[in-house]
Image 1 (tube, helix red, strand yellow):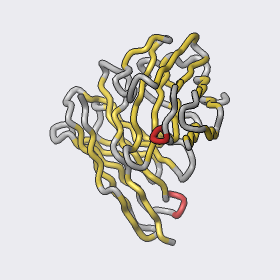
Image 2 (cartoon, one colour):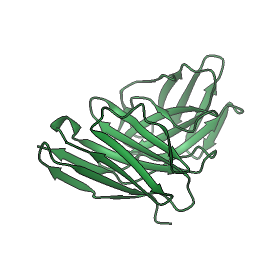
Image 3 (cartoon, chains in turn red, blue):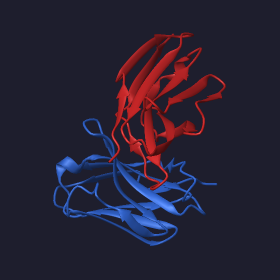
Length: 112
Length: 113
């Protein structure tokens, strides 16, 4: 089955700096890669996703890149703000099944 | 849309008691997922249904756990008997089959003493 690894487990940045979270996956058949943000005591919320037919996707301050050859994908947050502080999860899925395989999460702290 | 609805939001019970968690998916969604989240194990998929049919229950920890989806708008996750190690937050999520985006409910925080 699919194995998703996520790094780093914790990340602290100064407000205004960029943050990058990286994930690798094992199943070359995976073709859908969402990112979820989970604030303390809240539910995971989908913030951005990418499919394997594109290499990059942007939504305001958030971008995701995908390298299918290397089987890794990354979340980039620019101009970080304190409200970006949360746990971020990456996940992977293939078209044969609609379940998601989640990474172990990255706790991002943005220091004002 | 009300989103995914879960009840109860908090449950405290004693070891050995039966616990039933409930989930109502987003109207029109035909895939439903049950997850468990703990600090030690992260976010684990327990079971998921497509069109009310269980597809993969390999994540269900043991026979004490069971899940049903009697119709498109309701699912239950039952633990009988409960044990302290079952303490966790249990999330339900739903999606449109083929659309892939999953939307999570608010979760049920279960504490077994």
